[in-house]
Image (cartoon, rainbow, N blue to C red):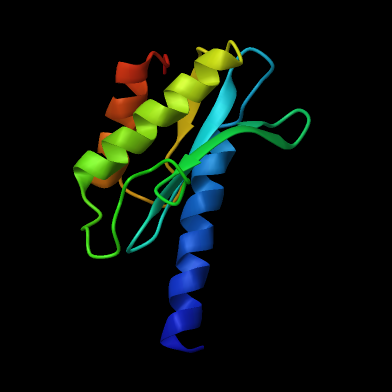
Length: 122
C-alpha cells in the first residue's frame, strides 16, 4: 500500500470512529467540518433525511478574502459565525459538533467558538 493510500485510509478510519459516537437526531442536527490547507467548510446536516440544511465556507461569495490572504483562526471563526447566523434563520439552535478526523484544536476549535458566539448551542 502506498503512503497516500495509508493516509486516506487512516483518515476514513478516524471519521468512522467519530461518526460511531456522534449521530444527529431530530432534536439536534450534526455540524460537520472539513478542513483543507487553504479553506474550511462547515455544514449542518439532518441525518434523518440525509440533507444539508445550512453551509458556510471560506469560498462563499460574500466572504472577503483575497488570493494572498492566509487561512488562519480568524477566518475560521468568521465562518463559524456565518454558519450560526444562517442556522438561526432556519430556527436551528442546537447541534452536535462532528469534528471528523481533525483534532479539536486550532482552526477547528476557532470555527466551533465562532459558531457558539453566533448563537449555536453544542
